Image (cartoon, rainbow, N blue to C red):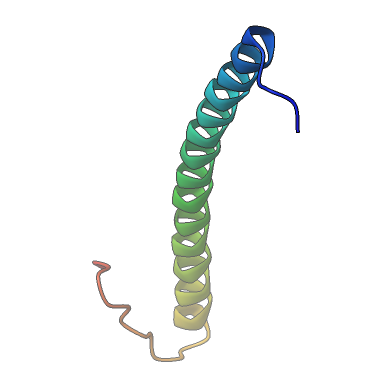
Length: 67
């Protein structure tokens, strides 16, 4: 195996920084997607509850949600 060079070390350091930045961006994107998914799920549950109310079906209380 060859000895590491200064250029090789700089490239490795640069790539580590890029990976860290992308990991951070990915974490933020995932958090936003999770929040949007939960928001959409709440809307769908509300629409279903409204439809059930129109049909005279009893509604279900979902934990953590106010009606």
